[in-house]
Length: 99
Image (cartoon, rainbow, N blue to C red; front, top):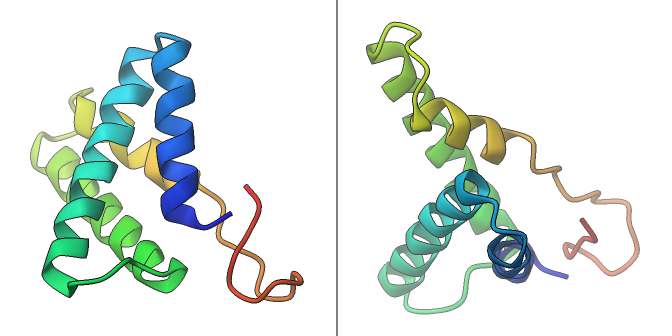
């Protein structure tokens, strides 16, 4: 399953589980994903998604640092994005991965 499809699947699951912080983070990721797709003019592949997730994590870390370590939604978002495993390039099926 591609990373973009996994994000949508995880969002659905978090909404059903009523996990507000995870849902909020995944909505942010999905919005950024949709914006990037519009900019690119086509679907994002896993490499594009990895770049997008790294960018989002960096933004949230920078935001958390500017708040001088204050607990914030930015810290939670960075943590949630950072813990998404990278796809295994040696796994059969090319660049798609199972999460």
